[in-house]
Length: 348
Image (cartoon, rainbow, N blue to C red; front, side, top):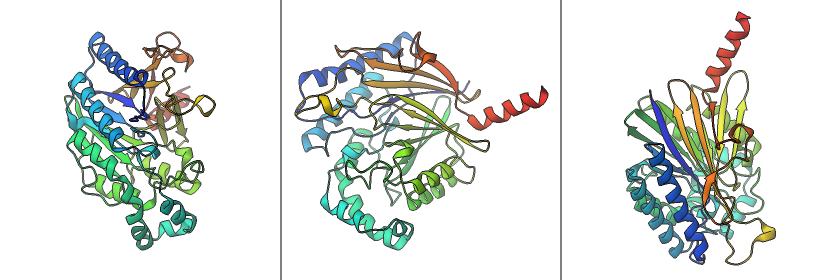
């Protein structure tokens, strides 16, 4: 059986101003993960971190705390450091007035002009240096070594086969409160990733990582991303993992021709009504463990959530399917499922 176990973390929002409760929460997360793996004899194949490792652009101190935490997590789970994957979130990049001015004075059409976009990209990419340094220090891998436009692909070998991670950067155009439905992955990042993927051998499982859920993208970019990530001529993902919204969510993007499963998780911080300086979230912090069975096309999801004391337990409230144990099994190979359903209807 070709099964693959992935831990999904997001939105830790690490700060050098945090109090002891927040570091205790992160340590409790590690303890819970170790307990899960030992009690269930799980072998973690990879850890996927879908953005916002640090808070509000991240100080030098915040990135150092994040780096040490991820190294602690790698050691506790006895996982190869190369098997930890990151994509940037909006908080992993410092806010820059120059970015906002550039976006306000650039038409959407300009993003489809490769010459103009490449010129603008020099400004966009400048603010990812601290994040990328942290990733390199944690994993020993420079994911951007062979790409130009913020995305990358990493393939890892496991005992059961190959997992390909498509690392999508949805945060390069972020500016703040106006981000919803205004962000981009972009044609040139997608083209670059598709061309890179074509040169690689087939993988048993292909997962996308992108900080923002798809509905945070510009309408035209939403269509571009879904089309290129669900078709054989593109990359044809099995599922895509997100963060950003500080909760758990599972969505199917589905029509008779193609489908895509979106998996959202995240720790996060309090909502605005409860947030002040140095106030951090302890309860309702989520992470997930996914077990993909590549032979059956089924996915077993374990949802975990913290209580008001900062301890993690089964998340039995998010979905009725998980109301007993916080765990349930659903199909992830959606096109296959549709074909099978169609065949069953014909037989009837």
